[in-house]
Image 1 (spheres, rainbow, N blue to C red):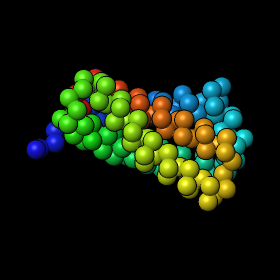
Image 2: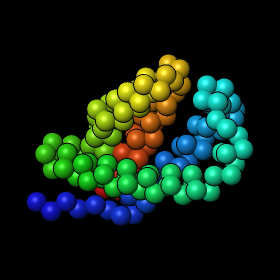
Image 3: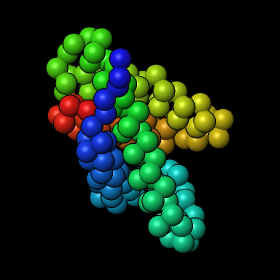
Length: 139
């Protein structure tokens, strides 16, 4: 079986993840709360903003590609609608990969539980949004 990935879906899913993040971490939404919990170095964040945004977008592309790839395999196996497959695949990858990684590292780094909850919630929304885009565009 050859896996077919729609690169437009990957690109748009990565863009969607950036939109979700910019809204989620906007000061009136969770930005101020996140800053209070995470306590980032403001000068370093400002100095490294361009690098951070480029790296974030590249990593979002990787995530979107993997999500599209696994969605294709899931759809071939289960035969759900494209949208349902995109959303359920995103959920299971969040639950089985993203959440454990965030929580394990967060616990060892002694991050606050509220910060871990905020981060995993953002990851869920991001992956579901990416899964929706990929499903709508048929991976």
